Image 1 (cartoon, rainbow, N blue to C red):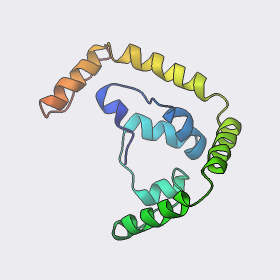
Image 2 (cartoon, one colour; image 1 turned 120 degrees about the horizontal axis):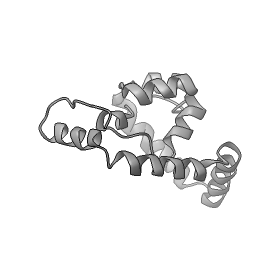
Image 3 (tube, one colour; image 1 turned 30 degrees about the vertical axis):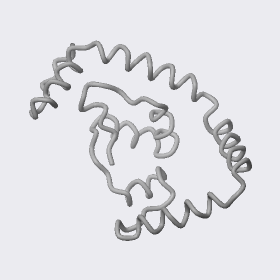
Length: 131
């Protein structure tokens, strides 16, 4: 996994700056966002980004088992539980998403982002110039 926004001259969006920072801490979030470095499922579990990592050979069975359990449960209760937790933990989510959208809008119009897109299409490393 990685937060690869920086590799294409962009910044985090969809609330990821709030979610990652609240789960992994500001220092780790800054590192992951600024470097775009990949990290494993085990690392994500240790950082608190995910609840558990499972070996790839057990992933499908684990997902099916949990999906069946949730599907058989009280969907309305799940909705309210998630809404309550999100309102408590992330009261500033909409403000965060507005800030991220503003950043994305500005960055998508930069020469660095255009360079990153061209580099990706041309299968080469981008050369960023801060423009």
